[in-house]
Image (cartoon, rainbow, N blue to C red; front, top):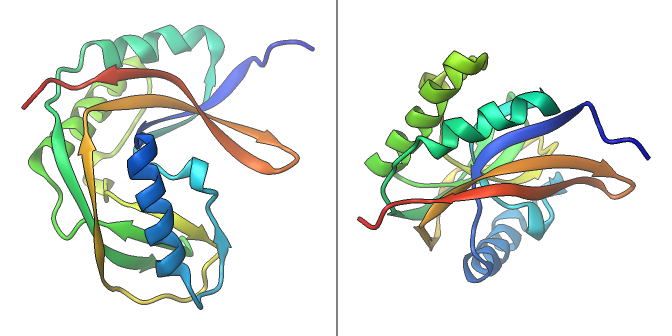
Length: 177
């Protein structure tokens, strides 16, 4: 089998196992009684920047962008359920985005610009997608998920007979606050 000429990539916050379990439980509760296709527990994440198909020879440039980022660790509290009608997604989101999260997302977007990726930071809306093809939903408070964010990752989206599976390609630590 030949190696792919391009990989579908994105930068994300990737939860540790304990946080992932809490996210998965909260997602199940938040989706109860609503339509849509649940996101598999192992795919739960918060996207910082979606790159799309990246030629394999360009991946070192993308990784160099992340190498240059010196963000700080932060705590993220996901305490809202929301629905984006246009995208038909159900999500968990923070009531307020921590400044360190915004700074990280902006650093990623700004760093990617010179290497050919046009990421519009103004469109950044932090959330964890918990269901797709959800034609209705309701916003509201949910019991909070506390996420101690200590790094970010470059993630590959790989399709197989089960659908999309996400795999961390590489991760980077954030500085202690």
